[in-house]
Image (cartoon, rainbow, N blue to C red; front, side, top):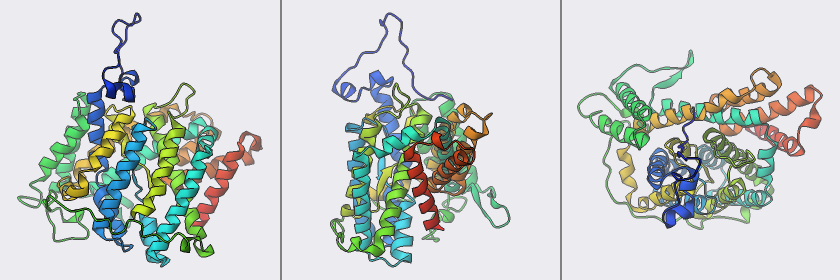
Length: 466
């Protein structure tokens, strides 16, 4: 399924679109086969799909001792700077924000479980960011991308797509945990039926190629969810921390002042103690693999590649991602990374850095207006995530399924990324599987040196988590 916007051009070039104004020329919008209108809609779609991070990330950081208001300020600033830089410098439509999953590792495992002092924990995040930046400047991640076989790249894209789909269904509480069958279909309730209605509407809009279909689907589903908890149904399952809240669409105010109290609250020297080195490594490798696989998966799924088949502007994108991770700790949050939800804007037709730049700017008002985000419930963004997963699964047909040697590593990535609920673990196990298979078959020479190195680091990470 190719969801990339196409621009019709006649052989003589008479109908070929020409670059328009300054913005068009700056971001090469027309030359990329898009329009400024499409890029703006894609940016809005990406922002709405990822905007939950403004509330969810501070909620998780609060468990580590960072005040919620300070977490909101840090999240907005990192997302603003990282995404705008991704758009302006890397010319990529991929949004950057504090990573989900790695923030839980920071708050629950490191600060909560291992009892690492908060300022030292932020110091570990900083030093991991320093190493991350050095690796980016040395273009090591570019070398890793070149070393990953094509079928495994396709598998990564599909695995991330299924992971996004699973997140969408789980966010809508359509798929729930079950002690007997692991997961199960939920019972149909007014909330479930509202989600289904929103999903059907979003699909219809996409199929009919309505401009801004994904964003329109989110808005319509939000409107449909207003009666939940007021006139019918119960949405308390969506507010785990506040079970007395039964409505899905909630007004919690308009204005909230920024809080800079945690900017610079970081212990750089204390974090260099030998006892904390394993945490620096875990942050480094987790961010390395997650960012690499997300970027690679989005590039493969959306065909955002150059003439050599490599992800477009890969070196510049890696530089921005590394710097965003580096500035996260001084601002008071866990590491930033490229975001899966960027696929929503790409699926909407976004192709250039204008998407990331506008999406980044959209974070700025929420330094003051973060309460407004409570108006968009999880069941409104769920259809967008599910459709994004569908679009990202397109490369599955390109995998050479007739050759187990090529297909198995890709298959491991496809199934283990969603089943482990971790891009990092799923990809690590797939890379280990690729190297082990080549070794067993006596084809170790086909594995590039950098892949041996990455596989060794992946094995260390897996053992660290066990």
